[in-house]
Amino acid sequence: MSHVEETETDLAGVQILVVDDDADMRELAEFILTQSGAQLTTAASAAQALVILNQSLPTLIIV
Image 1 (cartoon, rainbow, N blue to C red):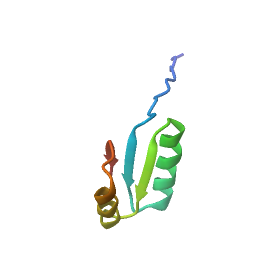
Image 2: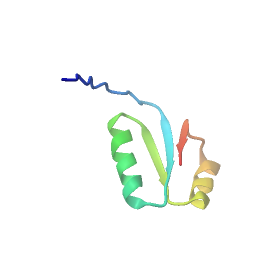
Image 3: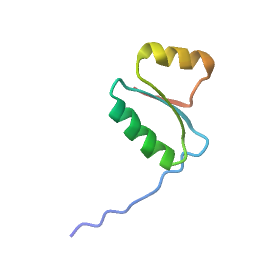
Image 4: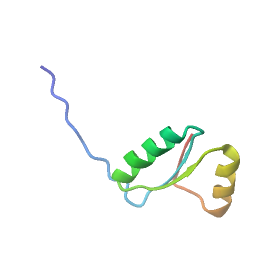
């Protein structure tokens, strides 16, 4: 029997930009990352991501 230890990751204050053309994946990423405290912005395309990046720079970009 194996023992799996769950750990929580605190992403409070981390600004993340998620870029994905699949709406379901963007929603899943948003749900998971905001549950950990991240401030999340999503983009459906590279063009949309560039517009967002012109307004502010995130700590992390997930593509």
